[in-house]
Amino acid sequence: MCGRINLKTAPSSWAQLFLPNLPMDEAVAELPPRYNIAPTQTIAAVVAHDSGWRATTFRWGLVPSWADDLSIGNRMINARSETAHEKPSFKRALANRRCLIPVDGYYEWKKVSNGKQPYYIHSSCDRPLALAGLWESNSKASPEGPIKTCTIMTTSANDFAKSVHDRMPVIIDPSDFSKWLDPDVDAIEEISPMLRPANDDALAMRPVSRYVNNARNEGPQCLDPSEEE
Image 1: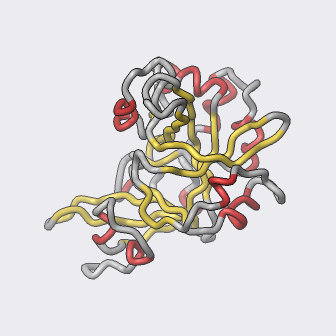
Image 2: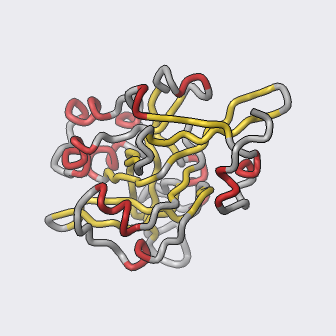
């Protein structure tokens, strides 16, 4: 599962991961540093656009185009990579509405004797990561008009991350960005090789303060060292 992420790096900096001058919506350029992004909140993403790529924003929690209720997205914050191509909610998006979700890292929780200890998992090189995402546009579920939403794909955890949780987000390698975003690449045989766990040496993690446990808490305190470890 991937249920909490952060993106504290400025858009002008993380955009360099994708293109030197990545076009972006005004809403992306105005995004503040975030240390504790939760489902239903706004997240940044990179999508195929016209003849290139563009940075935009989505509501986290995919709402299929056929859904009448926005709350369905609360149950679709993640899509299992092993079965997404079989699910009515995800299979069309997997074929041609894929996106890349920039993050500095994500949080996962480990059961301990006195509750759950949060861990911050990030690139071992301290550079932004690009998570595999799917997106949809819905014109029925929100009274405010069309809404664009997304989900983060997950896979089995690699040996490094499984000590905390048995699932992890799919992290797309920069060499696969073009193929992942290409809507003409729609065969599961071409897509599935990209839906693999990250290499063990690609990530680092550390226990952090339980301040991050509350989704309403925000700020650098979310990354404070754990008082218990």
